[in-house]
Image (cartoon, rainbow, N blue to C red; front, side, top):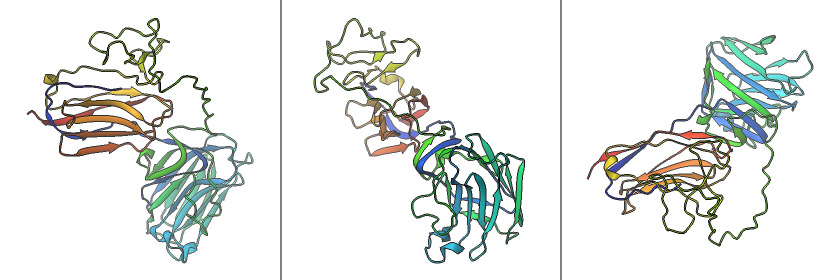
Length: 361
């Protein structure tokens, strides 16, 4: 979508506030993982998560101390791992450098925890005692080597680890394949949108297998040729909302022909499809805000652009590699903001409260 602003605009300083719902679930695919910021399991701490899978072996959680990056003496470094091994759940923990590894094995009474059903795992630490609860009715415990020390995990991974990470420490480095959600530390749910990095996962979903690939129909049109509008199918733009850049050319988006999504516009069916909104610059004083919802499968594209006639003062929201990328400039240099989670999953996402502040000139 292109938004054009003509006339005098205020000098602006850019502040971007993106309001998104927290992400609590992730679908881990082959060789996938999510890396989260550092966490600490205190002497009276608790860590919990829910998982579901049909694969009998894979990493659910794995955390390492900063020292674990040193290859020498790697097997003696502090770490924590929650894994499925042949359908059973195992917890391995080493509290201190040079310490011993403590292990807990929990077996399912039904044969396997990889039955496609949701299961919960809770780690409750009470000083030197670590209690492992699975589904709140399978309980095992182990005594730890340290009573007072916190276990600080500078790298915490969900669903798997990067290649080479954890070698010599973990019983398996196989990636989990399925859904992990509601990860919580000390009764506080963690927001997965704060992930440091991730690979081969589907955020904000809970799938046991990869989504079906979209079938792309052959394109029998010449994209280099300018499309010819069909008067019978192209709706007339509502007054004050849509206007044509050049009379006689196709310049606006196709309306939702199914009438199932009120006030929605569809772009990309025709080449150069866009919408132009006229904004009175006198109404844009010290601030303005914009809210829109978008859904798409495309990797990159322009969502909106607005600018002063000199093109030096502008604001734009783009989709780059599936991620939202916001830029604005008052003429002295651009300010940018990005959102780390892809939004090109075909679901509706709402972006709200983009605000530009400044002084009139």
